[in-house]
Image (cartoon, one colour):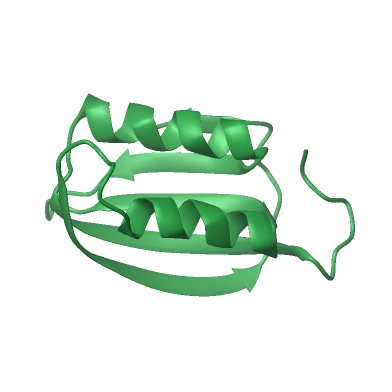
Length: 97
């Protein structure tokens, strides 16, 4: 469940490089994020990367980040570039965009 404590609620933005574009990677990311209780989105970018935006407890978001950097994702992840910020809201669940 997403924390309502604003101090521990963060936004993780991750740009995933590699052979990751496609429904399989976005679906896998959405399922893991939902299992963790995060809200946000995963979408393909025109340059071949996938952008993942997740909001929730920082510790939980770090678990998603570890999964993105791990070797269990569909496709092949070469690099994950990360930016942390304040949660902005606007997400009701985790979606594939």
